[in-house]
Image 1: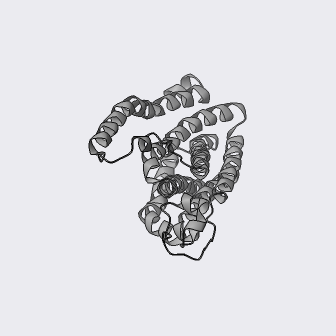
Image 2 (image 1 turned 135 degrees about the vertical axis):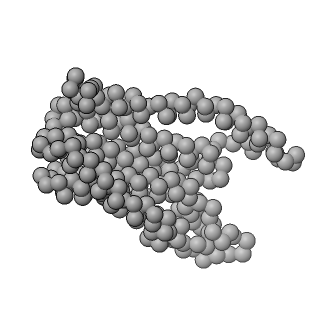
Amino acid sequence: TWLLSWGSYQPTFITLSAIWMIMPIIGLISLPDLRNQKINKAQRDRAPQASPAAGSEKIQMGWQFYILMVMLLLATTAAYSARLGISLSLIELDFDAAAAASIAIASSLFTLPIVTLIGTLSDRLGRYRFLLVGSLMTTAGSAILLLATQLWQFWLAGGLLLASMTVTAAVASAMGTDLLSTRALGRGLPWLNAMTWLAGVVGFLAAGLVVESLGTSALYLGAFIVSIVAAMLVVELRPQPLFVPGAAGRPAAPRSFDQCLDEATEFTTPCSEMA
């Protein structure tokens, strides 16, 4: 509040972005020590017969994993930006502080049942479908905010956006585990988790710049468009219903969803069962 009264939206959100950068910076500082510990442990546990060339092979994460990273960044950035605009819209519409506080309460109550059921629902519906629903929640929330004038509309939009952020981050992490090989998990998952923090930084900066220059309506429209792009990237991750008759000596199932799509002729399990 003090920053907003002293300056404007842009320096306020730049300050918030700087605060959000603290955790990734701490992680980058501590990462070399953790990496060295893992390397030392791997060297101690290495079997005597292991080939030296095996450890020097480049770890491949696959194009689908990179699409998942970009999708998570876009979807979460859109949700962050739109949620930040809610408070500004309430100020413009002369709502009081109690109304602003009620948004957080209503959003949390709306999201709580979804959080407790994420694992069950993603296993039943498939991670691909659940991830698509998460992206489209941001689309729906942004569309509601473009037209919102009543408090209940902000409640609904806030709940959809918070649920979208929660669902997208959780399911993307699970899908990343499916897409990565065992050797690539240690490298890929930290980058995937970093996308959520980076989205917070980008979301704060974007909200400040857009609101300062164009207003909250432009912010919601931008979040709407970005979430559509994120949903289109999710479509690129859809499972292919491949089923190849098995043969003697072939493995019954791939180790990851990525292998299922890229090496389907080697497996007898449909890729759709891995989503």
